[in-house]
Image (cartoon, rainbow over the protein chains, first blue to last red):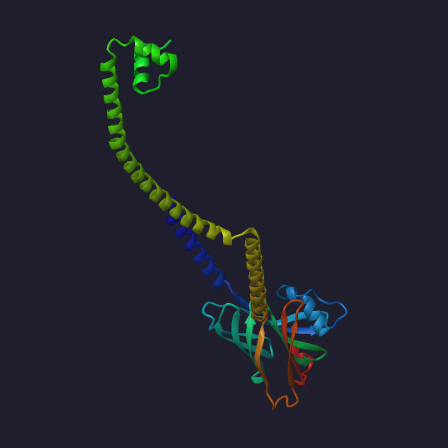
Length: 146
Length: 174
């Protein structure tokens, strides 16, 4: 095989690999209730990578997902909703660069807007937002690029 | 034992002396004719010396002159070429080469360190999630505040709110 065909094939393979790698970006967004209980349930797999930080920083021993959404981004301009019975987290992606995604986040309690924030979500750095106190626990909003 | 021809040649050249000369002249059959021939040979020798000798001297000078010019030219070229070579190599002495190599390495290291230092913060900020802004509804939660933390352990960015309206446990329902 000549040099040019080999080089050409390598470029195509790399381009396809890069394209598929970009297409595979998925953002997991969840509504999480953090509590201290005598018998904590195992942490959900989506939160395993930040389990230590969650426990250390917020001081709770159990984290339960009450609502979540997984969105695979193709254009970086999508929006989606992660909901529980009373809360809704609206995520509006407003662009993408090498580092991550620019997101507008709105937390609703039923139809009432509690919190709004704009964030640049890095692909290697999860985002945790401390929401309102709920009973003896705490509502957390977690966004992770998978 | 010399032959007659050898003695004759030596006699013509005036190289026979003493008893050998006397014996040779006594052996000549016609000494007057021999003396005349010797005189002619002397004149011929002088003529040849005068004519050919002058011409040979001129050629010798001419060749000498040509040789000297050529040698001088070659020496000049050689010295110029040698000078260039020597000048080129003379500057690159081993100490200077070592010094130049060391300085190049030092400049490279300094540039590398500067580039790494400039790049490092950008890389860190690039890989951390950033909160651009945050707003809490002032009507619902008038005393709410927001703070931003970075947990370096897992590169987690935390938006910390305080003073949000507390809700009953029922709101934790799925």
